[in-house]
Image (tube, rainbow, N blue to C red; front, side):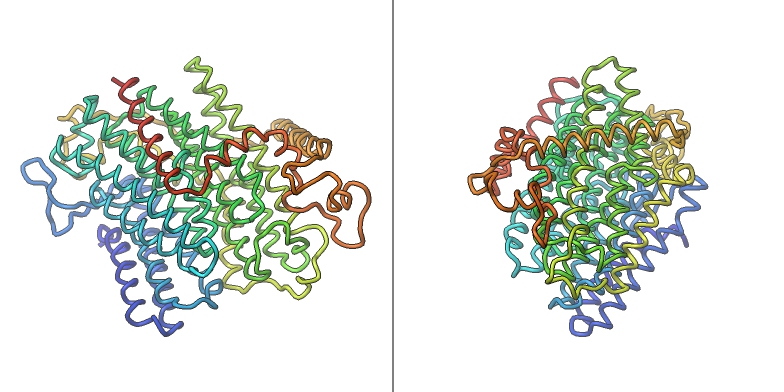
Length: 636
């Protein structure tokens, strides 16, 4: 019976989507019950696979319509669940379940909620199906459903300024990603005459022909667009800001991970090309640029959700960099950070949604002092901020520490200066992330409470449960890393590095051996960060770096824009005495000097982030061309 669970978990969500539209469009209790039941049962089915797949090492396969391979070729659509796909499926199911619970309170005042939950369930089913399928064209179909559900949900609050524009940008750039992916799949089918990923892996072993390189480049670019790495990241900030926060949470927490999963599945298993130094270098460069651009753009934001959106881009850069190192240590760190990013970034978006629900704004310059009225939300935010900034004992520190080790090891073993620069970049980005969240903490939760928020209260229980759950998990995963590694990370990373069992399960025993595919010996990554000296040194570095940035900002007071001048009363309020009310620095002022000193860089970023769709499509085309050309030049 358990072999049916992967298919049933996906089908149940699709079926529930139609049931909500038919029976629950005008009845809140019915649609909430259907949504809760579907997401809960689907989650339980995925959880039931942990023991056989993660602990016992089994691989579960299922052929739709019993269309098993004929004459050594896979004809039908197969679902195949190994530890890698189950790892991401668990993140999908848990994220959408928490988002559904949060939505019951957060969305209750919106209209047309039948359409909302229909799209929500279709989105959850498509992302879950993408992670569980063993057929690359079926993966593309799920990408299409995911894209159009995401577009509609981005525009759901279409009366809000920028919602329709954000949805249009998402549609255009997302469709480009789908087109690149489909073209790459078509090239693979023309060459291999199969769409089954296990059989493709056995056929493409060591193939560096022109059509193979073109397919690899296009598919990598397609999934890069779905994961919003630079330069494909431009629609993310608008979409994450415009969408309801319950959807921003799943966009940032899981939908972009679908792109990460696709890149891992394609590079490690289908093409088995991650041992090529050229591919490693290309993807590491994209990852490093992504983490840096994301965090520097976040520092300039005045809007809470938009700031979180750029941080999401930055953290995906960490994941891409780590998994692209081609090592077991890097892959373990990357998978762990993908999991942790789902937790802490989802938590941060939920806290932003709580603030929006109670105050009606997420503008950092219009908030302050909410810790007095929303203590649970404040504590949850501080946990998420500590986790994303890489502070111990939260989960973000654990995964970042592994990634730092992996990057350093790669730099030493390869004697490549590039990887040393990447290590330094990752450390600097982490410090800037902490600095950015100091700004948000001060602007939103501390300082003096504004009079208009005197009557603000804590959010409802349905909104607090997901926030508290994710906050607890951020601590648990940081403290009990070894348990997480043993049960989830080691099986998932081993599945990515070793595809013999994956091929044989779908195609028959001995198929991989006949194709010349061999396993790689791997061992669990040992990890410990309880050395107090390490903690003291790390804290000292971070403290000094943040202090320098803040003091630099205070010392360099001066105009950035013509509308701001150093004689403005708001600067006098903080720097030369306090008025009776609101002496705290505004949300956009804390790193004002930093932005001034980096004025040239931000002018370039401003030009690139023009908001014009044609500019964004041009960036996507150029990024894709760079990937494809680099593969042709350096991997042939």
